[in-house]
Amino acid sequence: MSWYQYPPYVSVAARKTKALKKIAKLTKAGKKLSPVQIEGRTIAKTFWGKAWCDNLESYSDYENRLPRGRSYVRNGSVLDLQISKGEIKAQIMGSDHYHGHIKIAPLSPDAWQKIKTECSGKIESVIELLRGELSQFVMEVITRRDGGLFPKPAEIKLDCSCPDWAELCKHLAAVLYGVGARLDSQPELLFLLRGVDHTELIAQAASTAIADGKGDAALGSSLSEVFGIEIAEETPSATVPTPARKTPALSPAPKIKSSKPSPAKKKKATVKKAKAPKKIPKDSEREDRIHNEIMVDCNGTEEESMSWYYYLQDKITFPFRALSITKVASSFGIGKKVIVKKMASEEDCTHFIQVLVKLDNSTCVVPLDTIAPLKADEETTEAIDDWTYYLKRTGGHPFLSHHDSR
Ligand SMILES: [Zn+2]
Image (cartoon, rainbow, N blue to C red):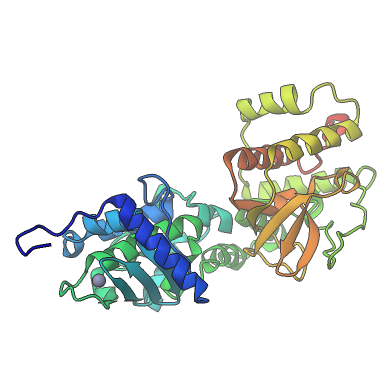
């Protein structure tokens, strides 16, 4: 082209193709890439992703380059994004192939301590934290400019291999938006970036309750509050699963029918009195589904359990990623990422619904209510929520309560 022409317009499609070609080439060369792929126009959809982007957009330091960054990230220009402690490394396809390096300062111990203290007892579970299901108060603490979790420009050190002299070039702007998109599926990375452990927000809640010196009953109820799950006699999770390598645990679920339903109930009542745990309010939509769709014309507990079994089998799309939300065995901790492979056998589900999960290289059977979906479709999440709701409404005895109610 001659000198007086404008630079050729590169269409969005051409830009995308270019990026895809580069990804293919790098992958072929043995590079393990983690590209940012945006579906549709919305870059971040969850609380964490949106809050990250909102934070960036709130600083005038960045406003010039952010619009180009948005269009770059939407076009798939961020070929690779790696987030580690205090550091973001990326490869970006612009007019050339560039490397970006962003350093994020760790959160100061004082600020972290303050957040933990303020949020103490206010975040019920890791899953609620990661899903961003937080109270207005907690959200304000976390997102505040000073002493919140999101970095300020002074805490962000930018470096790109492109010739742009601007502090924030469009490539790094795209990378920063890419981080927002990534937080949608992996919100824990924000905590990693800031060098803090997100589970401490939950642990703090538990230890504070214990420190209040309320004894065993209070401990019991605070733990159930923290993890959103009934514990001790009430819960299948405390007693059932025996994780086994390769083969599902075959130990039969404990029979709770004859075993002291009344002392268990009594104990629960005192626990409840000790610290008024949250009541599960009646959800009429769910009740309707449960009684008019899931458990229609059930005769006896076996039919009830199988009705649930087939309802869940039908609605849940396996496999899906989930988080363990209660300590079910020594190999399993709270907040472990697992893959939920399928329903456990019918025999394993006569008392509680159980599923087969994979953690690293081992597979085991755990109660469905001990995991919470991280990335699953809506129908899957709703079906699991139906089950945990029903479990809580029946005091942890899903297939006994109707016949046992006094
Ligand atoms: Zn650049």
